[in-house]
Length: 107
Image 1 (spheres, rainbow, N blue to C red):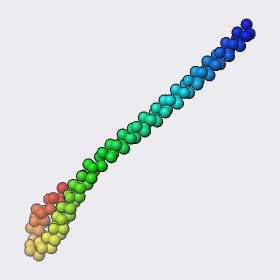
Image 2 (cartoon, rainbow, N blue to C red):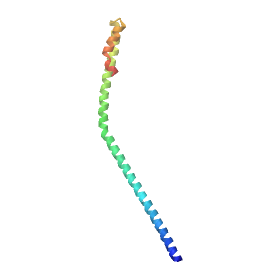
Image 3 (tube, rainbow, N blue to C red):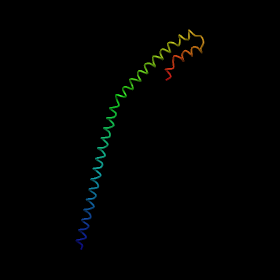
């Protein structure tokens, strides 16, 4: 009878160790899959980022053109201001002419 109990306890310990081993193994496999999935997601994000670079370049080119035209308008307005001051003595008239030439600068 003692032999049967010792055998049952031994098999129980072996069974618990086997279950523990399989649980640890499955956890490690799950973690490995999560790491692979995470790297795949990083690759996807890097690909999307790489694909968006041409759009960003075009946007910057468009904005640079807008900035150039805006700067030209500012320079033109600065050059016109002294001329307007000498031509028109009334401040209201100068402001009216400047406000007509500068609406693009505000937008």
